[in-house]
Image (tube, rainbow, N blue to C red; front, side):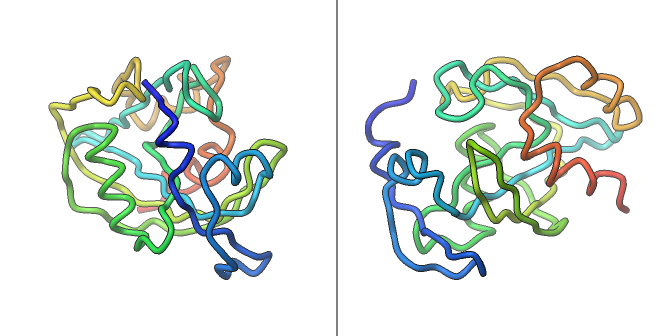
Amino acid sequence: MADGAVDEELVDELDAMGMVVGEVTRAEMRRGNLLHRSVFIVVRNDVDELLIHRRAAWKDLWPDVWDIAVSGVVAAGEAWELAAARELIEELGVSAELAYLGEGSYEDDDVREVARIYQARCEGPFDFSDNEIVEAVWVPIGNLREWLDGRQVCPDSMSLVLPRLDAP
């Protein structure tokens, strides 16, 4: 379960050009909807299914909503790829080689982020002991849009990750 320590984690605040202009706590970043860095990791198995998961109800952003990628805020000064590897370990309990899929930015009333998107090929088994994920399913990539239809899904993943899934 979430605790105050998460709120006190330091993250880099970015300017409109994506340059670091200072450090703020995660709580300050959320409260002010400040521009920050994030990573997304698509988990795909050897038969081209994606690991789709439902976020925990206690999450500070989009609780109890489905997501097509493991994701997280990059810590202040943390390298992008190290943040992606850390998120895989924290949320799924696995390590895997990461392939870079691209980057982009996303902005709405809840979040403003500059993100890098990665893919990990992994069969599991997964360990959800940090309780950030409450349910997970494998969905064939060819059926993904149909499966997502009618479900609440994290809008940043839909914007940043989904367009990159059909790429080779």
